Amino acid sequence: MGFLDKIKGTAKQAANPKASMGERDKIMKINQSGVDGTATVDSMKETGTQLGGGHQIAFELTVHPAGGGDYKVATSQSLHDQTLQGIAQGGQVIVKIDPDDPQSLLVWGAAAS
Image (cartoon, rainbow, N blue to C red; front, side):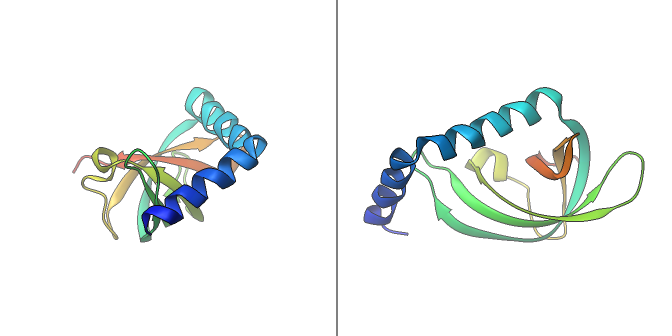
């Protein structure tokens, strides 16, 4: 993704501030009331970069909730280099799961081995 693509992405966000506001509200809700869990990274692919150095990553995960009953999730989120350290396909990650919508989650980083 080149510089002009980044500018176009920023312009799209500015043109639709409600969409980014809704996403921020969702992230804030999961941060505040989410349930901690682990997941296995089935696949991950960088789909773009964000201004400020973030990488947009598309994940396919198998979530392992505390009560059992593993399930699959596809999600995309922006992560910085520090958060991405140690995250690899086949590895375990720490996630925060939305208690009202288990398909919505945030990847926090690599699980300690």
